[in-house]
Length: 90
Figure (tube, rainbow, N blue to C red):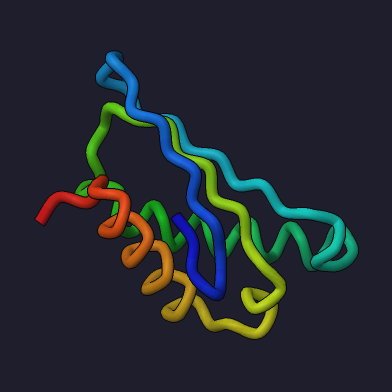
């Protein structure tokens, strides 16, 4: 699944444990910029963690547009991708 801000790769698993990864390419900037993007994405994801199905593997990869996005825009993008993938509980 993808949108203009990021790509979501998900794999359903048989174990009841959720695994999440955030992969930020060097194309997005230096280490300070990449770590800031990862921190924002991680915080946005964990704010909706209780609504996410627990039996899957999720990998989020941001695109260049994320550099100018606010926390709330990143959170909205993550929620939209999780809904599209069917991994967000209503």
